Image 1 (cartoon, rainbow, N blue to C red):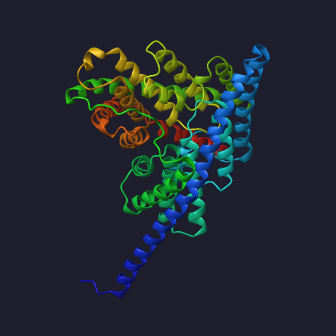
Image 2: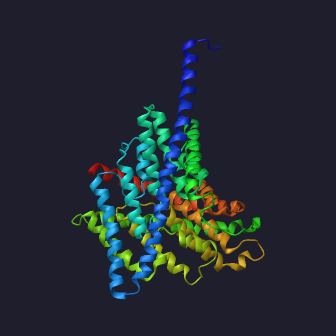
Image 3: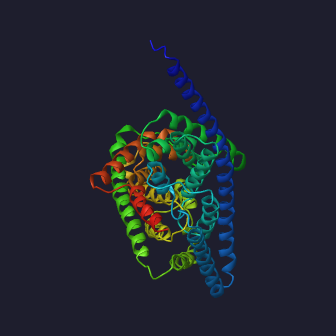
Length: 439
């Protein structure tokens, strides 16, 4: 038996430190829920304003076209200018930067990052770029947690735990998915199970969702009808969908990297001008096909109710496939999750509509394939299958579709790994570190 009083004191200190971390995770999560909740509300208003503006502009075809192109170009350029002017690592998703900070490769950003990411994300995503809200939400959540950790002078290990937990809370609010936010911290950000980090992640996500629900409500992000449970023998068919998602995910990752490298190589052009050009192209698309632009939530919702026909799915998939990489290369704040979910949903729905003979009398529906496709495509690109499945569970409420998703994610995880393709955030992390060293 250890009767050393010093040892007892150390144990008591550890308990006090854990209690303090747990309490701060709740307080930090509440602040994150308020900020990201407001961000989501503002983004909803921006998206609605964009749609109304495009509808109004069609009253005058020529001037309206110019107005839409110019407005999207202006908001995109302004978002890129904010990033460049602030000198903060606010471009892109922000998740690679969060991971680099956790690894100790880059220093944490000051609180100035938060307004840059908030306003820049509204301008870029609300303007029509095919970017997700989770990237800014994750980085803003981590930034708020870093501020709280510094303010209360936490030790380094607890500061990192709170930082990672704040990032997870941001993801939780972005998709109204508290379990996914907590798992994301352990599976993607720190990539290990640590009891202190787990407690902080759970606490931050709980309080963040509690506060955000006062602003956003508690309903899942997507409305999905009750689905039958597919027969177990359909598993290999969902595995085939996972293989296709894995191949598509590899292609998508490579396209994003090559597109970013292409625009990064245009050193004679200021970043704002590159963003202006991309914004003008997105504006032109918005004029002709308003439903094609933006984060992709409307497309995902239409997919999940079977509202898109087989003839339109390949067109939407191809356009969004290119638009996603082009939007990310603009150097504005914005994430990848929401566009990935839209692509995966289109892929899955198309697969389900093409092979009805394989699923006759099995209980599987095209919507089941759409849900599995979302999880599989996210797994293929990010390589975080547990986060992906839980995220789709919480966003759709389709908890009885676990086995189809598991089959699809199994194959979608195996294919890019066997091909030697790196997860997208690992690839973008190297780019983030390189950009940070030049700022």
